[in-house]
Length: 190
Image (cartoon, rainbow, N blue to C red; front, side, top):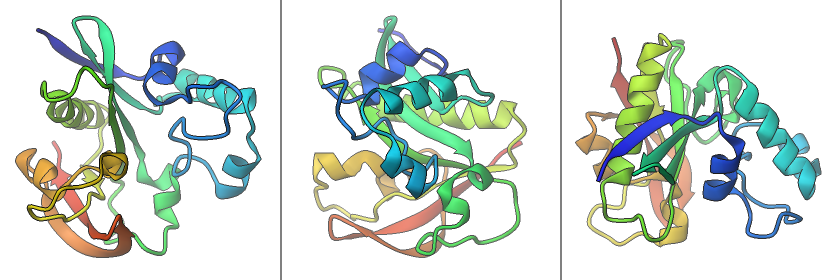
């Protein structure tokens, strides 16, 4: 078993991981923090896929993908914070002027879970952001202690997962997900 994490430049792999089951659906594709709310709401059906295809061609691409034995197994959204809605988010604090990258959404395909994909995604995201010159990377996971998180709401990760990857809590946030507070976690790079 070999896990490799690469930049998300292959649209078909991104679609496999975060695209809707029905191509005409108006959900997901991990666009809500990436683009403005008005644009996100206006994109319907195939236009959402077209927008993501375009993002896969941008530098930097919209995230990283973990491949297990060559198959797309997991997704992590990653981008410079200044180019996301986190730069303007009233609930997630802006703690300083460091040009950090944000890591905010994870998805592991059914059949690939419990194989270390999440850990590989975080390490791959950290490595990619570091290669690109980011001074730090931050995430906004739930602080659930030992309580179970609804799998649907676990897309932001957990505080423990981030701590295991060398991140430290920097601030509380005003955001709550599935009844759990979210915290701002950061890891210095370089």
